[in-house]
Image (cartoon, rainbow over all chains, first blue to last red; front, side, top):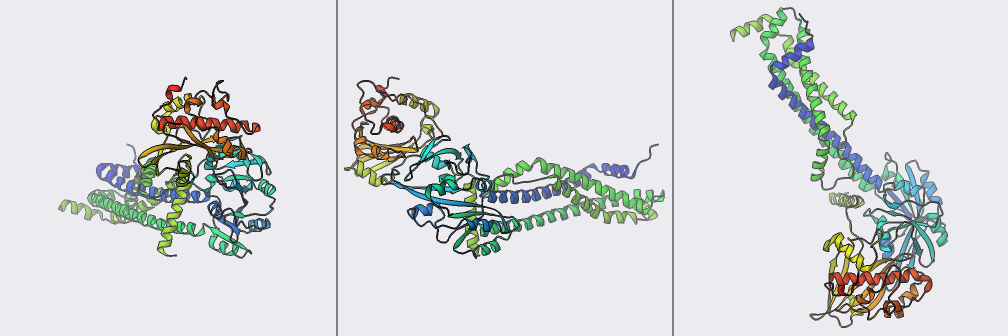
Length: 398
Length: 218
């Protein structure tokens, strides 16, 4: 006759009450599903939001005090009022420990007598061919690419600038007033930002054409871990500059994300507690129903420790089974969750909203196993301390 | 920071991020810089105007685009000459009476975009031609009123005889008599003629119920 292991005995005991075992497993599976999906959403949302903010390029901009740093403001002011900074400021800012990278820029405006009936302004943004594309890595090209050389007579057009000027890669473009030809080497996709209407040239080319060796602005990308507010205050100590920063907005968003994280933890905790109570209830009920059986096992020589282990293993099997089903469900429905959440949110960042990885799955399985271990203690202890004669007698009486 | 400020910042950021994600899309059309002023200047006796927004994609899609290309004698090319370009057309009134139309089109030039506007009478005869925008080394010469005056009195029937690809007109053609003020800027000159022909075809298609189609021999 084959000798059964304690695991097999536990497994067969669970099979005797199939419906109850299945419902308990489903309860745990639901809790695991909620746990994985919520944490996956929290991770995914935060990562996507951070990515969207990073894709904006730099989070800070230094401009000379009083300089109209936006093209729209510049146009409103009739192209006047540009103020300049020394190039050395870029190097000194780049040396700060909070800085991940800087990109110097020089904006220039010319009067184009052939734009409109009485003329108009044309603005050009000189950018560093090395650092700017790196910082604005999310800027997609509709055609072509960035400049071929640091001082090339080349231009990259924002989508709307290209549309207005009917430019394509390989076309020439004339800088009015200066009567200088540049070749179009790239056209950006539409981004819905100021970049759409911008004509980019290499900064050295703009400096050469306009005879200016200085800068109008410096874009700064700050390290993730840096305290942006403190860094902003530090920048204000530089002479004659003003700082335009996204720090307040980013801090507010991240505070909200942290608040959401606390809520997610709370919901997950409630789900875990409900699952625990369900498991304790089910296993305890099962123990009470099997009093006589436990009594017989004990009278046949089973020790209290054996009974404890038997009931405990049953609980763990239920929990691990539920955990595996729940995490599988979460993985299978991640895409659906993503779509549903997007439907409810007023603004969803680009990229996946639900990020479930192996670490999260293993963590959930660990948590669910821990729930099993904790929930099984009381019913197992209760079963282990039953006295054989009492249990057999109680069955006879009932 | 007050709650209101936070809400505003979030709204602004959401808008910024949404914009950055490319939510808004629209092709660039060709509107009058200052319609009130421009309509008065082109039609001094006018009392009002109506603005119509049309596009090839909305009216007939690819099939219509092919018909228009056949009438032009050239393909719509490039990234920015597509069927979904919105055209803004102005119907000009004196009291209740329609006294003419104004319409402009974008056209690719050597160094940049050209915006060629035509003012037409109700029969589709050119009353005025001018560049609203022009990027060219010969800009001054093309903007000279004498150049625009050469277009006055022409119709789509005249332009049907002109081949925009070869730049040639029939021997007795009126378009062929238009003089290029700067021979070195031949590309921009031809671009201006192509823009005028395209402009007239679109007006014929969208406003004149193809009244000049009978002159098309294609």
